[in-house]
Length: 300
Image 1 (cartoon, rainbow, N blue to C red):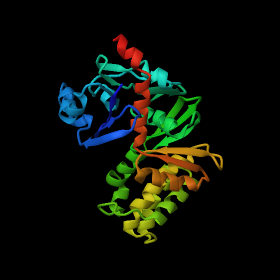
Image 2: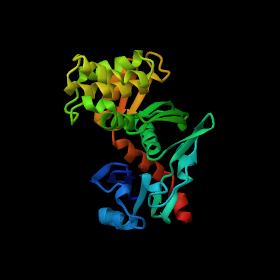
Image 3: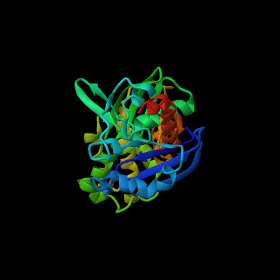
């Protein structure tokens, strides 16, 4: 394989990178063309509009991760059951065009008979394993729906999803608490964020601690412009409160600098040791998957 077109096609955004034969990024592009902006039957058109120059070059293979493989996406890629590593994921690709364009399947697992799923995060985890030279670990991917992922012997053993970002948005915009909050979040007030995390860690749960946003405002004990940061600390702290994290536990954070920075700060209150990986995890994961595919592509 000469070059790889690595694509992360999510709900709200579309990112792509052209990688050389060693997995190094030659160029990156980003578009506000998440799957929710694409009409049924138009995915191929959008793909060509965004990446025609790269995709049309000789020797370029394309791997796509994320929500493009969902029922609402380009082509449904059925979930791959955990435990799953590079081989399991690579064996269940959904081929848009045989030998040329494929979509990475998401992963599924179960907790007490209740299913959990991810799409896109599996590629980031596999990429982080490669970047950090790990075979085991606890990996956390903050976001609208945060993922806590257990990796053993190079395979994703299982994971849990927390709707932390979505709950923040709901409380921020559609609850009684919104009346106490300013229209915009503004700059992060780290002291207020730390207070929120601490309140969550010593509290009985978010259903109880969230009301403190209202009462701190009501009694004038926290200025309105500090409250969004405090609420952010509360919801992230609640996510962390539920985890079994002995002091000194190593946690790998994968994602944007803004979000992983907040989680690193919150995890410090649990004495966790943190390593951080950014957007490069997606590209490395897709490149590593592509390296396993040459015999399969030739057979198609």
